[in-house]
Image 1: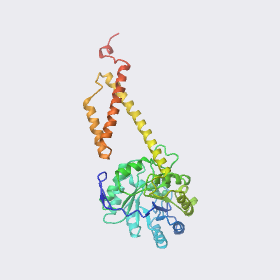
Image 2: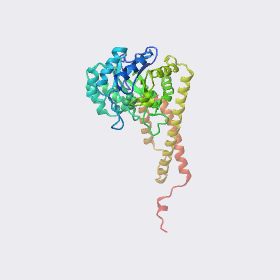
Image 3: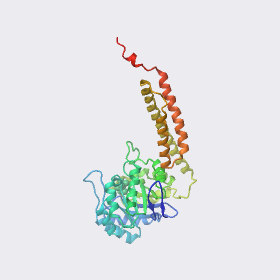
Image 4: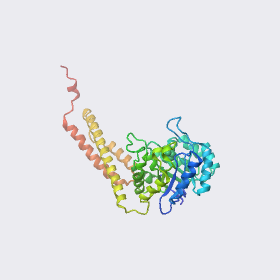
Length: 375
Ligand code: PEP
Ligand code: MN
């Protein structure tokens, strides 16, 4: 598929999805630790024919120094062995020019940009420059912070360097309260990124969202109901002794059990669970809307108090014209029906005038002369 779209100015030719009738499944350890660990994990994974791609972190971006920072280049040799023995295409995370060069030299099939790299346009540009002229699929994880533009920007930088086989990975966000997750899924982001980057395959990484094994199934199913094209799930032959992300990795056998419990049929649009998930999402979005309306109404009241104190008219035609122009421009930019937005803002404006009239009628403002009466 070759396409260009207006929301995101990029050209895609995505061949990254290998799942056919089921979502594309990427699995493998958080980190490559030893050749034996890699081979045993991969041998376990191919027992389940639903796994399409083998992943392993070779260079690990750890939050604190001194933790296990990955085995480096030797891990790429182990990946080659895994590929020779199992036939699984391989994927690694790259964060700089040296990583890209080493990965390409060792025949890695798919690269991904990690969440801590996507946050930094300098690093993303470095990776993009190192990939200029190379034809390889690249997956871009969302940045750690919930900034969709930064995520799209990374996609654009790679595309401008000539990469067209692109995909996105939703791995959750760091928010003030992530509970019960390690990284909050902010599920509404899936609809937003779908609207802004239509046609780009979207994966979900339930492992880094959940941070713990017992949440993996719920998170995976929710993502599938929201229509993701694939999942990236970390697996390890012996997760409890893993050198990174031990609490979220599963054995290949546990992965099979997990997959058995999921509704992997992405043609399966009419499942009651999917409807329920979508309804939950609507409930959350509506609650957000009401909270925002409360905040807006409160600000409007404060503006009313200012107008009262300064004897200003409540209705300011120029300001209202500006607001309507700005909001309808934004609506048309992001693809929301302009008439719909106009109607909503008419109602908001009416309400706002009501709130400000209420402020005026509460108590008469002191006139300047009354203020300065000498006692
Ligand atoms: C990983 O996939 O092991 C990883 C480091 O993920 P993220 O970039 O999402 O934190
Ligand atoms: Mn990990």
